[in-house]
Length: 116
Image 1 (cartoon, rainbow, N blue to C red):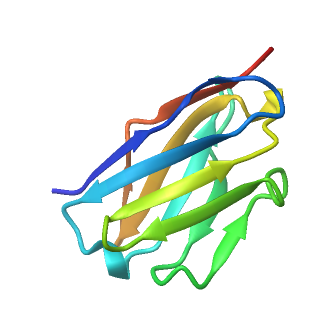
Image 2: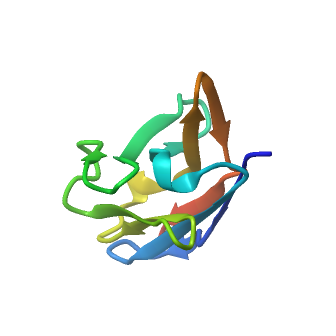
């Protein structure tokens, strides 16, 4: 069964950094694209970053370009989101996501709070 488990969230001051991790299991990770989304209360979940199965293609939301980096380790079956120069507007629950055939799978989410 597909499982995605996020970790690494927390409270950080503006300008600080965090690295989120998403550990995957139950599917062939190395041939599956992965994404990070985020959501704040009252708003729709939004795509933050995407990485192709090989890591050769990476796409970012305009709001995070130049500050966030998505990466993956196909041996460890883990996808990462390095977040630098964090802003209060980055405060959200961050979710790991993948699509297998026509089904979307999500992790439980990890809270990121950027505040002084």
